[in-house]
Image 1 (cartoon, helix red, strand yellow):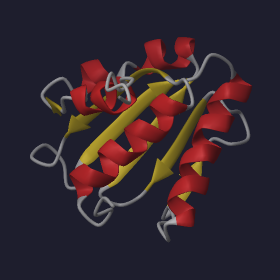
Image 2: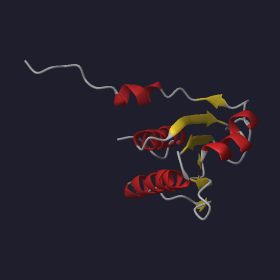
Image 3: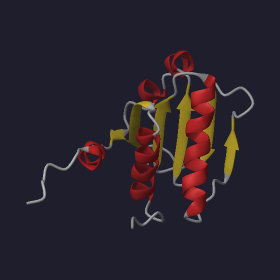
Length: 131
């Protein structure tokens, strides 16, 4: 079980939840050295406002099952940009045109991208066949 009190582990767990729900362009940026606001941003896109809300709901639900609740949330009314604030990790879930407009990846370009290759490894089918 991952240590969700560790900011990096929490960010990666959130990215995995979003990826499993078919979020598009999931990115994790380490911004700890750039701001006092948070340690990591998790940025993702849904395909529609409904998908965007469902992605944010799933993050809240799955982390809530593990006893991790957001400090605050915003954007569930419009569903164009839903923000979940977990203190050390802030989650941004956008519809594509809103993500392009605000372009957080460009604004925080000095942030350190976190390699999410473990997502692909976790999702890869096992090739071991029973004898």
